[in-house]
Length: 280
Image (tube, rainbow, N blue to C red):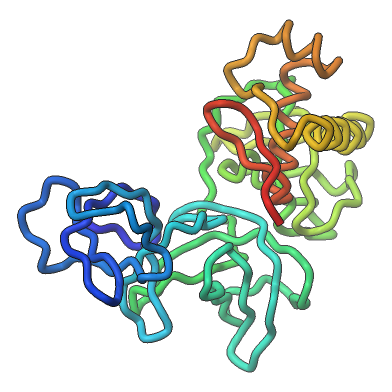
């Protein structure tokens, strides 16, 4: 089954002057195959080749495949930049040829061109991919965290009477109470500590200003080391903590937070082999 808004592996069913038509791997029926435009096809690819692609819709509302890496997929949260404001809403850069639509009705407050905002990718009533800034209803309550754990999340709403709402790991409910105001901005990534787990599973967070400030220096250090080493380093989630400490002079947890920050800022990509600078 070809899934809209998802990254998946598809098999070339046939090749035409317009491009390659892709179908589910192993499927005998290519009647619902989706087009990968000719400009994204490689001359060595042939019928039967399996490609990893993202599925979205073109300007004529037709399913289309792309090899480009979408910065957000269906059911996920990401921080994206506004590239255009129109009478019907805003458009966001999500790494694809066609920008992502953020309707006025799905905006939580005023948005500005050039600024980044956390959004959730969903299908509207017309089965089109759209973004929404209304994240609360899309977050989960049952997280794996315990009181005292350090967590990282993105600020998605600020209520002066209640506090700062945080999407922990871009997935779970988190709230920093008003009296512990972190003075963060919407779209900003912060570090905090779990101070309470509510009866419904949602997290109450305690803001740690010193830890928060530490994210940027660590990320900067790793970025500079990437530049000095040709744009790639063989250290990832599975690397030995002692090796991380030896190479970067930081804990494994600090390293993971820092590369997570660089990834969300679209500075690097994280692969099974390690980390690599994104080409501009």
